[in-house]
Length: 116
Image 1 (spheres, rainbow, N blue to C red):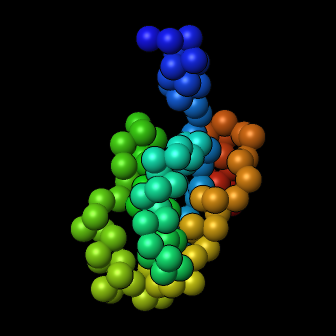
Image 2: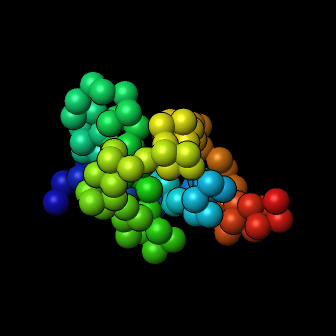
């Protein structure tokens, strides 16, 4: 392994998530720094709502780092997404995921969300 490859892998393994609280869903989504591979998957087509849904699908994780949503969830959002699961909330959540990073640690964000 080259020094450069080792630096990239170290940076990847040291990444910390931030938390996006979605009150409409009663969920805390853990968001890790974006990779180039994720960008390719998110922007696989140019439909704004599919890009927003893929942003959530690809980037939203559980506290243990496992994916929060799967492709079946993506299809359910597309087919039945209304009200708290509809386009306005999807767009808002995707925007929060893509917003500048919150510098607080995940447990601080979750604690603040529980207070509110």
